[in-house]
Image (cartoon, rainbow, N blue to C red; front, side, top):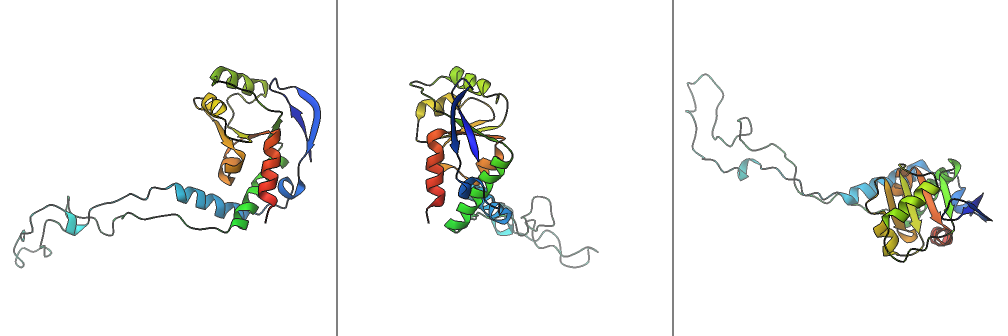
Length: 210
């Protein structure tokens, strides 16, 4: 598959880049995508949820009524979960939701996600963007030139660039990531994938190594 290279004005430069079919043209594996996205979202969870159980409630421990003769069920403490203000039965406790996933499964998931984007014509190839200082106005103009205004966009830059990152930070539905940090969830969550020309080589090298 070949993609035309665009400049920052959204015009074709006359050059085309051939995408590696082993990365952008494989048979997608939906289960690998499911596992990778599940791991990414699980690793983001704080797991700090907590509710008080019976032993942790700060109430009196006296017996609230006599054992027999009331016509009702026995009740030993106001801390009982059956009373309002009592402890919760089997409530949530802090835990770690993260889990491990094989490197090759994660590679396959990213390849599958990139293949889906390529099939949907959701990839835009950009020649590059020179930005010496942060400028939100310039970044908005770039999205406008690429007809991506208001669309959920993921811009993949070849290396860390604070000017580009800071320029995009205040723009809704737009995200900038370094090619080496690209993950399956971000690819699928974006409507359009904007790849810098140098980012393509980085992604292909990353996903074809054993």
